[in-house]
Image 1 (cartoon, rainbow, N blue to C red):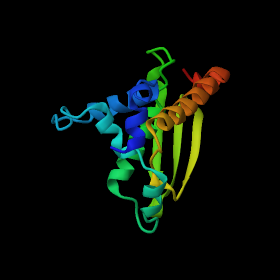
Image 2 (spheres, rainbow, N blue to C red; image 1 turned 90 degrees about the vertical axis):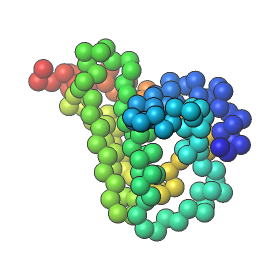
Image 3 (tube, helix red, strand yellow; image 1 turned 60 degrees about the horizontal axis):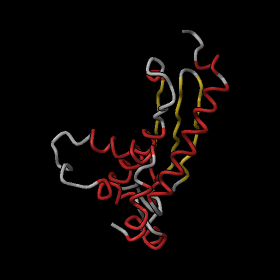
Image 4 (cartoon, rainbow, N blue to C red; image 1 turned 60 degrees about the vertical axis):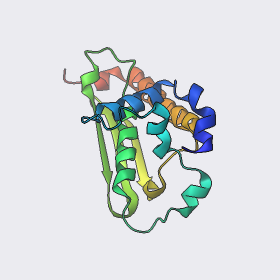
Length: 160
């Protein structure tokens, strides 16, 4: 684990977004391979310093493990926890990453497109400088999405 993650881990790991990310990792561990790992150890692959980022080549297809980490983050950004349980089922996400790390991330709730982000070749170097940065970034997108859902409920509920 990097020094950055170790210094910030106690407070940053408690953020709601980071807790959701940890839950996602643990839920996908069907064979218990990560049972002995601490939460900080699970988050370590997401922490990439600027120096480490510069060493990662951007030519070619992204590493499959990097793509998997990206998808888990995108799925957690779609966890709209402020929605009542009977409405959480209306959430859908779609990620498409093509050759060379280009693609698009779309998060929808009902018929409302809540997040529409282009992935412009930066997928190869996906990561955060700290656990705190991951928590703040995830919180920012989730908060903006929930705000949009509250602003346009008629679009979310259209056809129900």
